[in-house]
Image: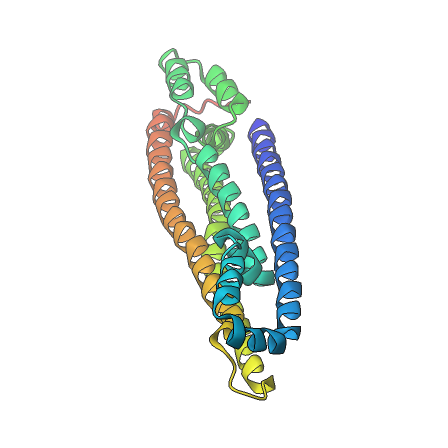
Length: 284
C-alpha cells in the first residue's frame, strides 16, 4: 500500500543519512588516529633523547622544557577526544547517528495529518451523511492513513454484523499500534546500549592505565596514565550524551503515539457507530 511505500522511502532516507554520517565519522576518526600516531612517534623520539635533554637542562635552563610544553599543547581538544575515545567512542558516535535517523523517521510518521488526516475524515463523513456507504468504503480503502486502514477493516466485515466490524477494527488498530511501538523501541534500545558501551570504554581505559603501572619499572608519571584515564572519561561522557536524548525522545514520542492512537480509536468508533442500525448494508 501507499503507506508502506512512504515508510520505505523514510527508511531509505534514514539509511542514506546514516551512511553519510558514518563516512564523515570514519574520516574524522582516521584523521584523529593518524594525528595520535604522529604524537606517539614524537613521544618516542622525546623518550629516546631524554637523557641528553636532562643533561642540557642542567646547563641551559628551562628554555627547552618551555618549547616542549608548547608543542604538547598544539593538539586540539577535538583530536584529543577522538584519539582517546578509540574503538568504543567510534561505536557510540555511529550509534548517535542511528539515533538521529530514528528520531527523524518517527517525527515524520507520528503526526496527526499522517495518522488521522482531517480531509479524509471530512470526506468519509460526508459520504455517510449522503447515505453513500459504498463511496465511503472506497474512500477508506484508497486512503493510506492509519484511520483509513482501521475503517476499511471494519467496513469489510459489516456483512457479518456490527460486532464483527468493531472486532476487525480493533485487530487492525492493535497491529498498527504494535508497528508504531516497534519503531519507537529502537530508541529505547539505543538509550540502554549507549551507556553500556561507555562503560566498556571506561573499563578498557582503566585496564590500560593499570597495565602502564604494572609494566613500569619506576613510578609512572601522570602523563603516562592520562591516555587510559581520558579514554575512560570520554567514553563514559559520550555514552551518556547519546543515551539521555534517546530516552527523552522515546518518552515524548511514546506519549504522542498513545494520544494519537486514542484519538484515532475515538474518531473511528464515532464514524462506525453510524452503521449500528441493523441496516445490513454491505460494502463490497
